[in-house]
Length: 163
Image (cartoon, rainbow, N blue to C red; front, side, top):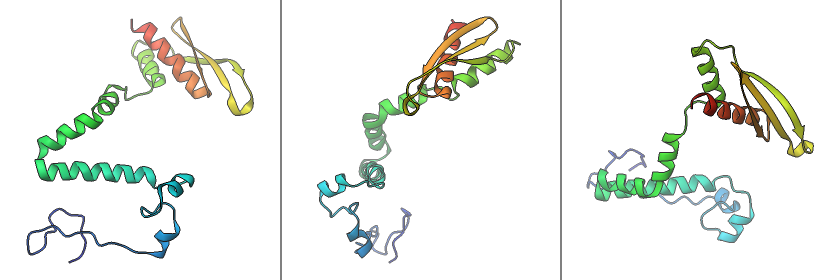
């Protein structure tokens, strides 16, 4: 029977097929291979390692779902990833600059004006101070890039105008 990722690909006995072991010289040469020692995998830059963690987590949740059902899998996800999910849901979907511009347009104010007040630090580690003004309200923000400083200034001004 051929390997299939579909859960409906059952064999004639009703059991799910197992994934065949792959032995390849390509995998043996790379430190990302699971049979290599932990020390050699840590010492090299292995771009696949985060993917393995995600795949492992997905496998555990899938096994929990198959064995215990949707409630058990949901409880596992909530217990292990609940704080990350809550933070993602609580985070604004739009950037502070976008929210400030939409607020200004809705209130028929002119568009926000951003002005760079200070650039400090060596070229590889700059620090920016930016001021934003709209409808007589002014706020400053700092950041490692102009964009980050503008976002910080817009967030501060949004806090000021929405109080």
